[in-house]
Image 1: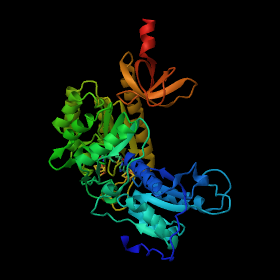
Image 2: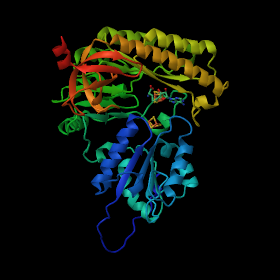
Image 3: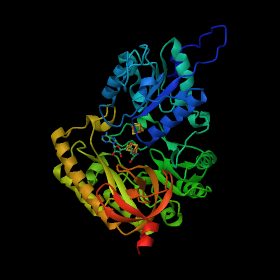
Image 4: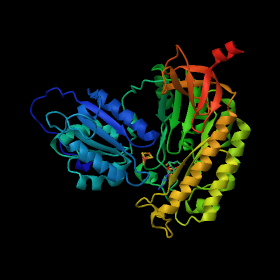
Length: 464
Ligand code: SAH
Ligand code: SF4
Ligand code: F3S
């Protein structure tokens, strides 16, 4: 769908492109966040500078997510606000002078509903899909003479066309794999992100080294099916070994894994690599054997439980996490009870749960016996109560543990900082002389359902 790019205007003279201030807003998953950062890199490379907020931005990129309903309606209301003449404030507030920013709609809604956006929102200047955004600066240029649309799924990977990363910060995402071939019956990702493709090993090692050189001590490898990564005969477990060996890298994580691709050598890496954090996010979606089939999940309840048991055998302290959908078409009370029993059986440290949201074009959207909203609400509340109970038990069991935390942000009270434990718990700590980005040793002293409290190890020793 690249054919709609208007030809570049020939003005007869070259004038330097004006500097614009840009803002990229992320609405989606970690890959969407990575893409936002990379679009920022592209705009910076083109000579633009980050805006302080929507208010002073000349270019606003809305990087959308299509995974659940209502994203599109929300998008149209955001666009509506951006096009008003404005005073001060956020999306509602147009800039002095009444000039509206260049509006770019990127991401998975752009991919899935590019045509609808073009028809409904004439003020959108650029529509660009998640596989084509390396062309963003050219599209913005082209939009000067009419809307530019690129929702192509190009054969040439975008990654090779992206500039060097400008990431700053102790923790960084690194997209290693994109797309999905699994076609779960509820999910839009195979349609918005295309087929599974893996980036070459050498490129990933180079990007990881560059991130560490820029100050990252933690890297999270990301992909829709991160553990399906394979390139030139190398598999995901080998990649983990290779990235873990990057000098200066202290922590390695990955997400999101598919149960079908959890190989033994990957699970063994949790035993063998000190840098690989003891945390496994492994979405299951349902505890009901029948629903797992209807979802086309390619794993059973039993095979999923067997994988988790193996993970625990390799790394006994591993924290487990998952994703759940309640109210998939045809889900009975007994089948939902299977999900609750699975949650209790596993003892997740954390989990994400969603009400089934019918997505146009996916097989489940037209399945019979759609579950009423009120039933979904009730089931979601019950599931979340079970998940919270499990998280509290996990956090309580970690009281007394000594570990390092990576400081991420200030806490609510003065002197407080919040960091992440190896098990991805948020740990609140009072510490002097430490900064965001530091890894500090602590002892966990108290636990709630969403966080733990910790004290710096030096103080524990002093008290002893
Ligand atoms: N590739 C990952 C999941 C990516 S989408 C995997 O297979 O596990 C992230 C999560 O969104 C999914 O795990 C699922 O729980 C949820 N999700 C996806 N489609 C959904 C839908 N139509 N309705 C509700 N939740 C959905
Ligand atoms: Fe969606 Fe299933 Fe692919 Fe995950 S594995 S991205 S849930 S289709
Ligand atoms: Fe959303 Fe696209 Fe990610 S639909 S979850 S932004 S892959």
